[in-house]
Length: 253
Image: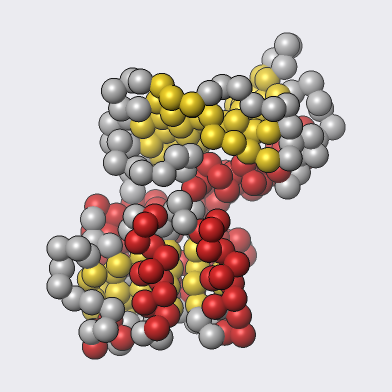
């Protein structure tokens, strides 16, 4: 498979390492420090592009890839909710292909399934209050994380007493705290922490006066995310339309 990389930072380098180890070829690298562009022959000849950039860049990157006729796997967060319907429309009838996920870790995908099942069990246990937190490295720009939002939406799909989520507190790298712990009773508060080089920790807790249940996913490094992104590319290269991690997981089960 011929892969184009859009974004060549730490994540892009790890994706490249894993893609090469699985017998694929990197035919193009697009980054602010690399002169190759979306109109180059090398990019147009890619079977698929894997895009990990900033929230402000992802939308335009994907439009440029579609214009070049290249399928895309994107893991950029902080932009999809504003443009999701547009992406679905652009991918309708097989005109373009986008597989988007807030997190490509297979472990996170399984954690998401557990999260939904636990929320379903808690739907008839109103004494339990749910809270969420996510911790990431100091370079992450969006808060809460896209994965936290996806997990919150998973809870909302099962827990009738909650109707939405909101940003809670944000603990900055210097320890200062902004935001608020106050939230309406029907809203899930999602707190964020930015610390060191943490790849990603997501924690969901259900507490009442008598006891509590907490589930945690801890990403130890970027390799799981990178492997999942390459697996997603291997899957999406033979698909059309707007795809999600659920489609990939179904293909792997």
